[in-house]
Image (cartoon, rainbow, N blue to C red; front, side, top):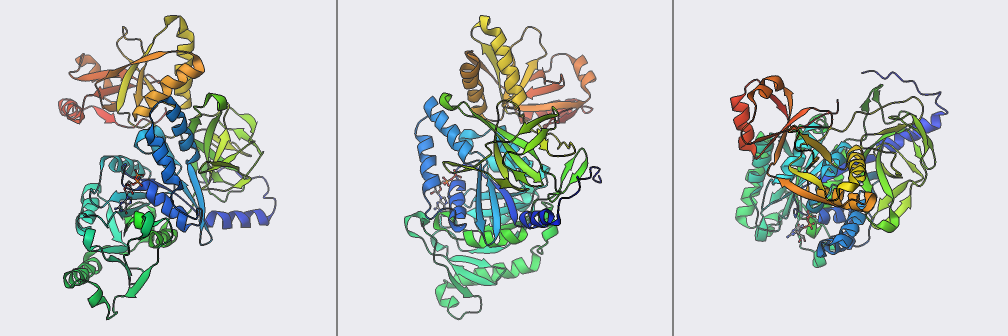
Length: 545
Ligand code: GDP
């Protein structure tokens, strides 16, 4: 769609020149992985190479602290840490990188998916011994839906692994994603000798680093034609490498930046984050191949990142669990123009004018005030209840970015109000938390079952809702877990289905817009229903009406 809004007279060319430069040097990305693949380690190493930290270890220490305890104090701490690690910004070779944190398994919730709505690129991190794992597959599906460029980093090559060919094959076959190998693993486990970088046609020899690679590693590089190579590699590895390279050159895909940007081709890297190995090669290539901030579709047409008027959308809300600091933060992805501290903006949903004071940039434990930000950046805004997920804020002509979809929940529970005299607080709390996007709420179609059904992606969402209802609304609640794990919205064929009456092994609920949602015990039950009702159309994802 062509842009309908015209910016107020562009003040001066300086601003637009500055915008072009700032946008062109930004790269924004999120790491998707299964717990334990090495996300924390890789994040640290990226920061180390980006010069944001001098010595790796800080992020890790916090993670250890976080998993040490599990009481509510720890939950507060956890939340605090999640807040602070929402976005990490660092520079590398004139570029500014924004790494959006997708919470790990303890924090796994809709936030993880929503973060991908604010990301321009994704790095799929895979444990070389395990290959693709469940959480990676789920997050990959969200990336695919959004057509995000995906970079694959295969980690832990220093450990016994699947062969590089097996790993590549799994990505191609199971995800249906074409690969372009940027660097290739020479051996694995005890025999891991390094990687061959196809960009420079050079071999980087692997060296284990001391102390988990807290300092940058020395890099020994030799060319493929170097006569020392044969003595450096065992004969079978040497021959294997030659054979593999012929194979890659012969039947492997060509490098196609356009296809990378469309999410159709994934550049693949091998390495060992713990040993700092392959991290720099990855960063170098990433800067060349990653997508810079691009235009966002809005109700006014596409808004380019260099559009002079500021706009952005909220993709995540964070309530601080610490009762002494009952602040809430709304995380805003900047889409266009220049964000400035204290600027006055329009809240597109309500039309209200608000001043964005105390914007925060969050790095590790420190909160730093943001003075300016550009497309691709994330800003933490004070949120005294005015923001909901997907809200647009803008300057000038009112634009609205599309809503972030509701993702298919996998855990369900009736939420019971323990004290009936508190029903007003209970209802208010439930509806406000739903409004804010903390959790999805469904209702049973059975009139006798009045309790709202919490529908979550991760256990943590249940805990957050119960905790906040108690602390912010003074209501104690109980959960009655429902034995379902798959949700599907009925997009067509509902009338016929309604006539069938009770569906075996299926729970029928309605969402907040009264649309029918079917809950199944498992995938198999879902497939049964599809087989029995060929006219039924279902969708795992619901867009707001
Ligand atoms: P996360 O759960 O994805 O954040 O994973 P972590 O970064 O905490 O890593 C999980 C475990 O794998 C830790 O014990 C790391 O030290 C270890 N690890 C990470 N990268 C590597 C690697 O390249 N080689 C080996 N051998 N271990 C690694």
